[in-house]
Image (spheres, rainbow, N blue to C red):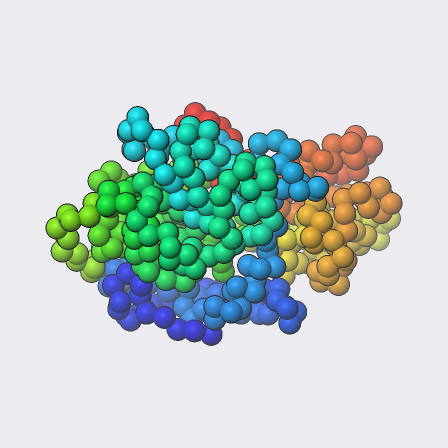
Length: 414
Ligand SMILES: [Zn+2]
């Protein structure tokens, strides 16, 4: 494990604020159990994982997670991707701030399957994407005819000084050194350029489901205040307050204007430290009650299946299910099948169960299917309507789902 100092103020006065002990990460060597510890900097309020896995281990994880969820079997994009309305809204917000009749040149870091960039291309913009997930790169090139550089943004120093807009959507929280990343983003911009950032909002963490807001993948957890401070330190001008989004994220737009006298930055912000510390401690308590609720719900389900001829299938073989097995007694149920829509998972092992295609449900003849996902709950349930009509009980763990890429209500996104 690797220890780091605060990437915003450089300080080392850190206090643990949130910990998930024994989190399980699949790796080439099998399951790796680590404590995910988030600390908060008492000087400036920045929240980050410390200590953390070394870079090689993280790269290995991402390399194994390259399948874009939007890409259906067969590789093509059949319809609009998930989160389409969010991406449209991101595009409109940028154009509004850009406020020019002339088409510009945009760099999207983490361009994924390319739908967001295609919105700009359609408007006559010149577009470049950077994306490490190979399958997403191929889809963006083939389906939207986009120029995509395969790899990490930090690997392309030739991108300096040529873009009007750089967009960083749900990426900054994953990078190992955000200050350096922002420095490179600034260098990629023309002498006058706009930076668009969207990240999860650490000042509004929501405890609603099994997957944790403080994900092991999020090395940094920003609030609008700490992000603004880091942007200012890198020479960006943040004129408009961050826009708080209904799915627990925020947007910040920042201008880079070369030659503008640099601001004196005061990195210390004990008020923000105290505020965020309180918020995260409160989140930890809320999360505990969410976990307790799920635990008793599963325990009741497992009880119902005892002694009879119940046959249970679990739909979803991702982190949600891994967590479900770790935190509840779900494995005591008579599980006859574990299925997932992602073909890349088929044949792999989770807790001794082999992941199969949803088509295997016909043969498994479950009496009950547990939908093990938050973000995909509605989508999975939709696939189970015919089974449900045949009398199979479909169990959903959550009420209304509001995840980033299932957020579809166009009006009111902003
Ligand atoms: Zn700090």
